[in-house]
Length: 229
Image (cartoon, rainbow, N blue to C red; front, side, top):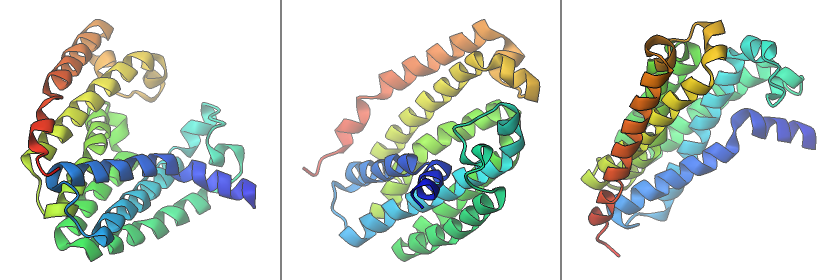
């Protein structure tokens, strides 16, 4: 039983869900200074946890053959601890849970959660093969919790959160370009069109450095928008 629970944790990457939940709280704080009903805040955190669990489960389901070839023993499906069917069922179950909880917050929160989840499923099924498009999605997923937190709190995206999300997006995008340099050999096997493969390693390193610097330059700005403490 304990082994199965551990495998489910690894499948759904619940540690990521907790980080996404913290991202939602940060989005709430920047947009409203925690001037929010506790129920809405809890629902926002649960939405993030449920939907990321669904996305990661589908990711492992779709990547099973590749992970098997690459001997990814950190994946419970590859180890045989869980079946592919289980991963698909977990994804199918967690998705409506996330949508229901988001709808209990507001229609705006539900709609945004739907768009974020749709993007995640498209990434799992196809986008990751397109290199830069996959990089953009991963960067977007790093920014999304802050944006969702703002919508949970005030039903819109405040300027402070927009800038915070832009910083997260740029940092994530730069990181993904850098990872493309590290994974250039493996990506060639799958014909993933990363910046490093299409433009060269030096160009990719230059792009990554410039984007990282831009994100650092923007980093002090959100603090000027937190004024309710």
